[in-house]
Every structure is written in C-alpha cells, then in structure tokens.
Length: 366
Image 1 (tube, rainbow, N blue to C red):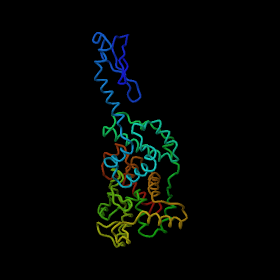
Image 2 (cartoon, one colour):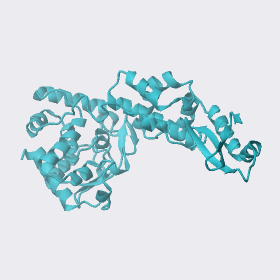
Image 3 (cartoon, rainbow, N blue to C red):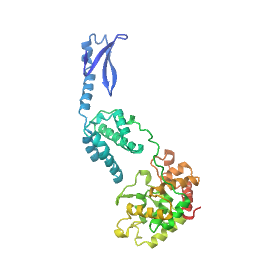
Image 4 (cartoon, helix red, strand yellow):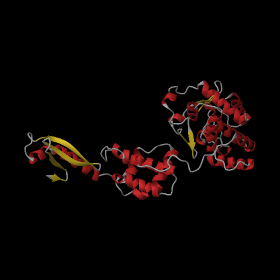
C-alpha cells in the first residue's frame, strides 16, 4: 500500500509493520507495531495515520516556502544587522549577486550543490564568496525561525569554498622606518590620528569617532565607545571592540599638545573635529585617505590606506614579543578565546607593557 504520504512495509524477519517516508532527500522509517497488533496491512495503514499526516504537513509546508525575494524583504525588516556599514555590505551582496540569481526561487531551492556550483562560477575573491554564503545561510536560518520551512540542518552549511582561508592580496604593514619616514609629511591632525591608529590598532571608523571625553587623563586610559561611517555615528564593529586601552606617558603628552592646539577641545568635542564642519563632525574618511596617500607619496613608501596601521600594530606587537593571547586582547578581535575573556575590561600589566613598547616604536623608533 504505497501512497504519496509514505508506505507501509512488513518486516518479515521480526514480524513488524514499518512506515517508510522521505525527509530532506533521505528515506526514513518508523515502527508502527507488530503483526499481532495489526494483522492486516490495511489496519497497519490506518494506525500510521498520525505519521502520514505529519509527512503530508511537511510536504505542504515545503511547497508553500517563500521565494527568496519575499524572504529578503522580511529579513530586512526583522533581522538585518543595524550597523550602517555592515548593513550596507549585506545590501550590496543581495542587490548585485543574490537577488539577480535567486529572487524567484523558493528558499528550499537553495541547496548545497547548486549554491556551491553557482559560487564557483562567480568572478570573485574567495573571501567575497564567503560573505555571500554567510548571507544565504542567514536567510535559511531566518526562514526556519519564521517557521516558513521545517527546522532542519541548514544546507548552506555544506557549501565549501576553495581558498576561503587564503588572501589574494597580502595586507600592508609598515616597518618602523617607513612609519617614521611618513610622519614628517603628515599635517595635523592627521599626524596625531596616525599615531593613535598605529599605537592602538584602531579602525579608522573608531579613531575618527573619538571624543576628548573618552580620555581618562588621570589614569592614562582611552575608552573605545563608538564608530563613525560615512559621517554617521554608529556602534563599534563588535562587542569586543568596546574596550578600555592604556595610553603610554609619551603618547599622552602628544594628545595633550593636540588638545591645546585644536580649537575644539571641550569634553564632548570630537578629537579630530573638522573645521569645515565647524566641529560638528570629525574629518571624513575620504579626507583622511587623500592626506595619507599624499604623505605616503612624499615619503616614497608607496600605496597606503588607513587599515595598514591596524596591520602594522599587529606586526609590531609580535616584534616586541607580545604573547598571542595578549595580542588578541589588544586587537579587540571578536574571537578572543574564553580564557582571555574572564578579565573583562581590566588592563593587565602585560597589556600595558606591550602597548608602551609599540608606542615607543612609533614615537622614537626604538
């Protein structure tokens, strides 16, 4: 008695009736009962009704799965990341790659093999493909969260991307000599901004969003509280990015000199306030990028972007013998090991020593 909802089969060896059905492309079975309980196949079929109903409901749910375009609209409203630059990245991948290919498909059409073959065909770097895979995985999870499809293993988790762990272009990291060649060519406040980035490994969005209130002059610490992207103040990139960092005495003196120099020195003023904006906003990333490249050209050190300072910080931490665990803490990475997270925001002696050594490299070249 084979039906589209499943089939009932007698196991002649042990005299039991079993219900066979398909689930996620695999054949499954469940025991109904013994021959003594259900002497005929018809009686076993009737006994399997709850199982048949469950399978039929699953089939009906899958057939009613939303299209990717419908799901994306709902995802934007309910689960899309709110941080501006993260959201912008998601929108770019959705608009340029995901929706043109999958918009009219149901979410259940996004299975491992077709998605992997499609990603392989895209003329993108492996890291970009990883970003797209992550968004597709998030859409699948969202569909299950909304109960648009049954809870199951997310098929996008089976998608592999060749070379995902390899960089196509190696990040730029400055030597101490290159950094010291650069500094005389940087006008203020970009000179101080570069020092802050290389001495703390700050992202440019974090450095530009600093306010004078973030500096604890008495205890010599700096609090990373916010970021600014496209001149819109936002949260920091990750929870681990929100940290209190120690400032060396020499760097604290540099900050004091800049505070006395700038016309925007009130507690709530931006540390790198733009005169063009009458202090209402800090300098834009575009302005910083142009000034950095101008100074790099003058110093003869080639192409330079602000993120090179973060890579430089990581390299210099390593060069002064900083333990890997302390490096992870100072870099404020989201994947810091649990053993390194137990100290909260406490500035440990190892962190203070490592930070001071990097500042000495930046300020004195030794």
